[in-house]
Every structure is written in structure tokens, then in C-alpha cells.
Image (tube, rainbow, N blue to C red; front, side):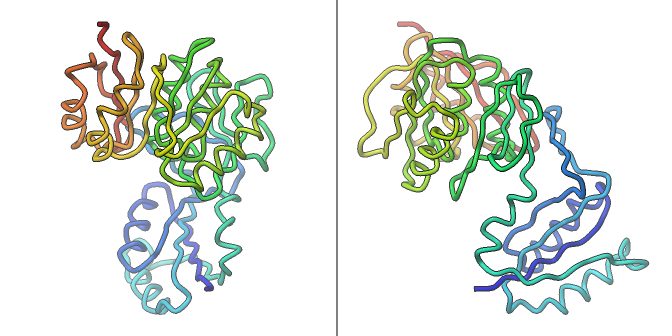
Length: 294
């Protein structure tokens, strides 16, 4: 099925507003694009980075009434003088990889970069995770993944065993191995995530150190570090399973949680864990804790 892509040139202070408009008028997805191939550095907590001249890209079903969308845009006060847009038709195969053009190397913390496998590495001396997420979640661009990557950069030590619960693309487990972990066990309910993680592990030459499982096959073990970037509901519901993977004195990082959901997730774990201050980016948070000894 073909798609229509609407590209609107705007400024950084209007990008989020334009995105909200397009979603309200029927866009199936919205992304932000820079005209230049600029690496994205780690933002400060709570900071959202847009480029000075931002292109907002909305994806619509090919049968969507685009004349109506353009008419509404032209009535927006800050577009009345000049609406700079481009309307393009995309086939399915184009859309599936369209985001590749807009996925840039991203830096986390002091040591860690995530680099799309089809782009040049900005810093060959850094810890570089080469990534092609395929259809699995986890590119580093979402605040929840970014919060976990920053935490891993600060806490992973050599020879640790790590469990990545809800491994998605494998980005967190692979980052842990690149940062010095000895062994990673990745678990996900989605077979496509297992496939993407397997491919990305091979791409990063760590296949021999990562084990990947669907829940029905997940092993029993206790790890030095457990990271779970899923959603607040499953984090609370699966707290006993996730907690069991953390050895006494081990570390736990939980994300995929909105700020308003943080206390309910903490409540599901606090009888076994001592929590650090909440880390926040946009409306999302990361919870980190150490398991009580004995």
C-alpha cells in the first residue's frame, strides 16, 4: 500500500506544535529531520533537541484527503505568510527504510556511541555499538533507551553478567558487552526482536557472549546487573520475575515509565530494593536501585 509523505519546513520552536497538528489531522507517524547529517549529542535531562531549521515529516495513508490538511496548515498563523512544504508518494518498501536517512550517530555519557550500521563512525576510539534495529524497538533515539544507555555507561564493569529484559534490538545488552560485561542474557516476547538482536550481536562481534530467549525458554540465573526497558504495567506485573534475576547487592535499572507512573513501579520493587533518585528525560523516567543483601 502506498503512503503520502508531507515534509514541512519550520523552526525549532514550532516543530512540536506542527507535529501535534499533523497527528491530530490523521498522520500515522511523525518524525523530525535536520537538513544536515549532524550527530546528536546527549541532551541534558529534560531537554529536547531540535535543529534551528527543522523539517517535520508526516506519514499519511495515500487515500487521506491531503488537500484538507494543507488547507488547515495555511490557516495556521505562523504559516500564513509562507508555508514551505513538499508532498511525496512513498511505496511500502520505501517507507520501511525511510527512517534510515534520519538515524544519526548518538553519543551517551563519556564513552558510548550508537552508530547506524550504514553510517561512518564519528569517533573510532570510542565504545561504538553498530546498530540496525530492523522492526525491533531500540535505536537510542527514544528517551527511555537513552536513559538506560547513559546508566550503562556509568555502571557497567568488567566481567559482569547482565540480563536485558525486553531486549528489542539488543542495543542495551550489546552496549553492556562493549562496555566490558562478560555475559548478557536477552529476553523478549517478540521473535522479531530475537532476530534483530541476533543480527546486531553478529554485527558487533559479540555473538559468543549474548544468549537470547523467548519467555518460554528463559533461563534461571542471578546477574550483577538487570536492565528492563519495557512499560510500567509489565514492569509492575512482572516484578517478581525481574527481581529474581538480580543477585543480592546487584543493580537494577527500569525504564519505559512515565513520570506519573514512577511511584507505582517503585512500590512493586521497594521491599527488595533501595532506589536512587529518579532520572528524567522529557516525560519519561529511569528508576535505578540496588538489591538488598540477604
